[in-house]
Figure (cartoon, rainbow, N blue to C red):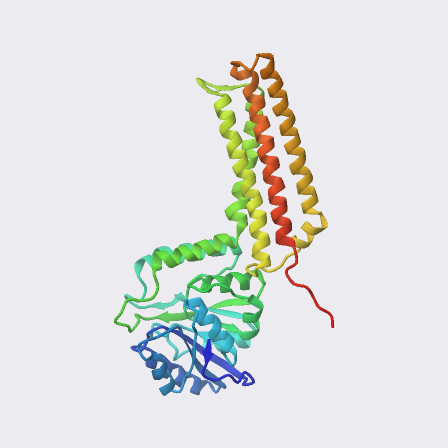
Length: 396
């Protein structure tokens, strides 16, 4: 990233940040509106353009209008915002798209909320006004409402417009959040992490106008919607892995041992050996999901995607490696014992044909125990590897 100005000793009240990629048609209008409002606000502020590789002369236009420009080499909407916020001089940062769809002439409500000590202020287009043709119907009635509801369900955010492009954040909150995504999901990450860190979040009504560009927007609804959803799921292993894994495991365990001793007949339907082996596979899947939930949680915390909890320290205190290995080895040995027992039964028949009911139930239990033992043993090693410290504190 190259900065036009590198004097980070400058301290201002506010930075109005606009990410930019070939916005020469609308950028001047956005800057002029922001300058007019900034002048009337009596705040010490700046207008900062985070350019993400424009080739249409947007940078020169911005400089000619008195804005500061930084060049962000790493591609993506999230990258432009991240490096723009990082390079800003303002204590408060209000960011908005530079396509002339948001009204930079009226940012008073954002400043009011900042003065009330809110950390994150999100624009709400639905409580404000959406002009005709300003938002595609699939975004307005499908994508944004569904993703907003999922975000609120998973993370208890209580936000009604998850993806509004006009929003504000304090510099202090930005550094605490440790944002990492580079694409459009940056907008979701900001809200989710602020909620997880128990920051003060609020919404203010904003207007959305039809953008002033003659070219198609950068947003790709289906692709970017999927990226938002994928990010939410990965950040919430409880819904992605833990709950499904627990339900599958409990159900499968109950059915497995119900059928293990004798077939179950319901009317003319008989659940027997074939069902037993099928349920064995679903039980393995359930256990895998539970372990994946644990690993996803640990990796998310270690990589800064989720705030650190007491979860890691509790695992270390309980010697997860040793306990996991012992459980895994015990199940493996138990499975091998049943395997030897089955082998001895087979020997009695001179290793010839066997009646299915005589041995298949025991074979199923043997393979189940061996697979569970191997899985738990392996995952224990992986979990221990994740928990290893990656940095050493050097004392001079």
